[in-house]
Length: 113
Image (tube, rainbow, N blue to C red; front, top):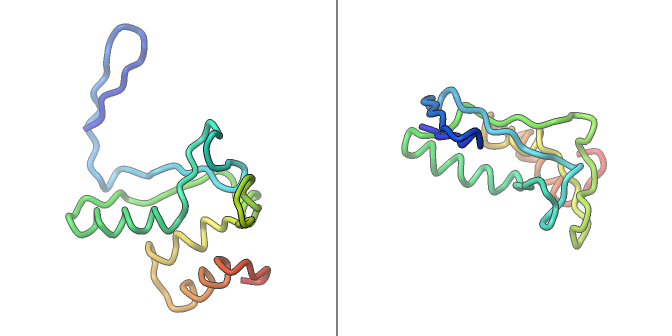
């Protein structure tokens, strides 16, 4: 269940199942606070997803905009960190041995991960 305040002096209740929910993420074009967009690191998404899956409450998945920003260094990260959402989200959404290796390489900052 989700209640949305439309600021038009009424509320709209939207009921959806977890299987219908896709969580939208910001990728390399955003940054940590005080940026106005929320940056959620893939490992945090994975931790939440696994916890929700254990209770049969996991969302359908994740999405982000846009693929051209994959691999960008996220501003104001120290040390500088690149963000590869597609590859890192795949490690828990579609676990495969090669995806895990790619995520490990990306975390180290390898260019050809």
